[in-house]
Length: 470
Image (cartoon, helix red, strand yellow):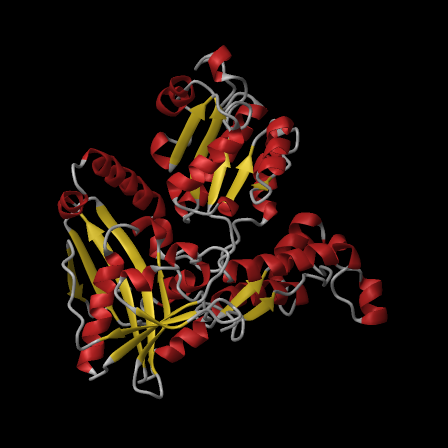
């Protein structure tokens, strides 16, 4: 499915009308400029929940100057609204939104420390010698960058530190400096050592269980930036300006963190990764895997897709790449159609344990085919819950639903992509038999006999919910 098949991108209206009343144009009834301002505000409300997203050109015209975006002479001669000079930028904004819909926005902002989050070198200047906070333009600029990073974290972007430093020195401002906006608990992965930064970025991606192409690297040092561009071309590397006052705008205007919707799971992501760190710490001290999983006291709640969870469902479908058996994409409108299709079964799974709520972590879509078999259209899961028997528990739910419908066979499909090789053998591990070898695209088909299936014991308690998305 094409995730953009039923998605509308609506451009806002450029404020091209000159003021007739001056600074208080809002007081003039019937003012075209006032009408445009009110229309753009109404659009922001009107598009919500309609599968429509805004390309807010009026905001960029305000930032860059209207003359950069619109030429009245061109409009009168050719009806060309967007100035050719910003056409590449306009195209870039469109691509950002498409990338966000397809789940290709970056997930993690990786920050250097010295002369990036504060001025000076913590190892040389000490806690009281670094430049940070009110009293200097640079100090306030570094605080502004940290505040912006915190805002990104609050909307679901992971924060990581990658610094050539002694770890204790690197941690000291987070713990002791009065004007430090970011705290250690805001950082999902903190790496401060003397290794090369390419190796450290690989470690950060592996620790967070995200792709290396999900990282955006911010470092004031041109040498380090060029090293990462050479060694890790998949990583987005920002070319920071010399003035720290411009750092925040550089990140914001890059578009790497473009998003189209905000879910409760987004807001809770930093806490979920913190809890994951505690789980891993417990796992490293456990004497056996079964005992470790039992100690988590996991509870898997589930329900069919519903309106309450729609945004999170669409988001997961379009951004999950690694644990994704078919990597099919669906728009919001297409997912909504599934809610009313009697031949389609859906599951949204939410995992809780004694460390906290992981949120909705897995989705399954299955269709009844012409032969009366239940065919797995989509099966995807967040990689942060891998190795916790969730896939086995999910299969038990599918088998139970198949038995309730007198279905005798479940068909599994694996469509390979460059990123989903970790699930290549999943159906085999779950007891499916291969019924169709790889075709030209590498797709394989598998079958599971429902009648003879015996559920395997897991350390997960499953609970059916009326509304898992609430």
